[in-house]
Length: 189
Image (cartoon, rainbow, N blue to C red; front, side, top):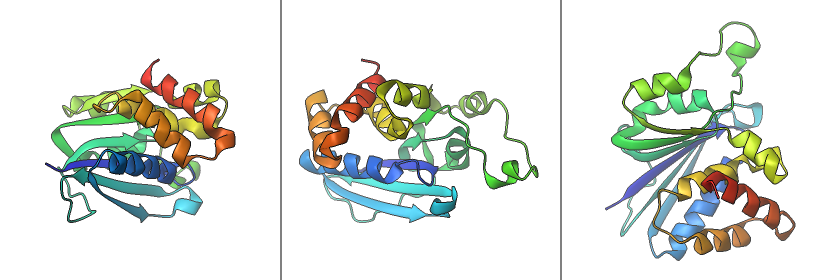
């Protein structure tokens, strides 16, 4: 059976490294993996979406509405934006950080209030945490992506050592220690 993960965020947050890490790990676990990156205005702080699909045999890299087992969101508004892609019993792993989109920056709109409560009110399984604070604790705000991967790892039956090996194989050695710390903080360890 194919599993579907959407990684959603804002340009520059490291979602591509997160999908590379996840894809690499799943390949080493023997799955057929398809990763597809959908760029919006990523260089300008717009939406970035990556699909990661894995299973015995995966034919298409695209995830349709109502098919995502997991939505991993780097920001609350992005989680809300892609909610319709979540399966009925799917899970949203979301960073509670708020990054103002352009209409909010220009004053044309206000950032929506109580987004986590609104997500939960739809019946979605929401795992929300302040990944930015944990990333800073690990040593860099840029490690939000690895904090999120640490949190996501709790929902997979893949040993911690294999996740750690994937980190070593996907990030530059000089950042390995920081990323391992971020990953463990995301897992709550």
